[in-house]
Length: 478
Image (cartoon, rainbow, N blue to C red; front, side):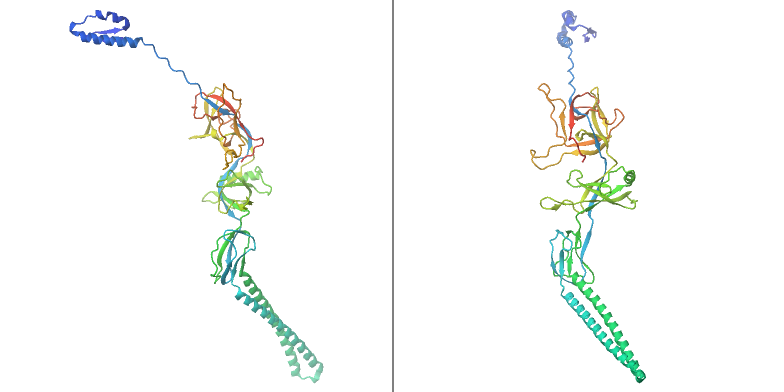
């Protein structure tokens, strides 16, 4: 209904403007109001055209987006504790000069691996050769003194026996002199024997000092740089540090464990619910920078006897092999390297495997989108376990790159009428804890969205296209 104000102030309500136009010429208006009459006619025509136009229809709603969904794969998975640590050598030797002298030779290449007993340094040994010769001469002199004393004793005994055989014919003074001479020669023999012992000890010391001039490696390992160059005086008044040697195979890995984990771990050890390696101690796996996963297996050989009260942690230690690898026969692990450490947490348990790309992160933690039976999209907060599989990283060309052990594939073959969605590259698979409560967490039969996450909104509907998560027959967690 439209209203019109006349020049008399009255309002004319038009319920049917198209019909009322016919009576417009009959309206009573003063003759001086011709412009007003024309304006009124234009307004009525515009009002009539708008009133007679048909109403617009709302556009049709778009179809639900197509998304790819997979059902989680049930698999036995080993959970782990994960920590940060560092590698260290089992043995450390400081190579020192223990005798005084001029350093004359350096017999190793800095930074190389050396075998045990390899010659490293030589010190000028002329003084010590002279000392050995002097000690040998003293031993020879002592041996000569012993021989002379033994002859003197034999002579003294013969004279004593002669005097005593005279009986009363021998004077008292002759008898006392003969007995004194025998006792003196026997004492001289003892002195000569003692001198020989002292000379032999001096000879051993001289030989040892001479041996110290030939400095050798006490252990096998990697040698550091030399801290003293040839031509310098070493060992003056105190030992001089020349270099150091670190053992390189095997290595220790040190890491600190929170007291809560340590108590839980000790209970698992007592209950025998952790896997023990053949060597009888607890398993430990490590990985260093730029490595995928934890490729180096070892065992734990030490746990400290107290918890550090300042940090609430206890120091543990593992042992890992570090063999030669590659055509160049080099070792990958190095003392001092940062390392990632994982220790088994209980026994293997059933968990659900899904592509890691299906996981999202929000204020509530990690979550996934699930398509329910009525095709509505819902959010499920999940508890994420260890990474079960990861595609190996390779610098080789794409044609030569290693094939993925796990992949995504449509459950139904594509047709001309219904082409399949393009399968993404599966880079990793993670384990999710099974939630027994229906509608919460993740259950084996849920439809998890893996492709098309950006197309859906929480609470809306989606058109699911079922895919399969395919893996090797006997996968191994990494």
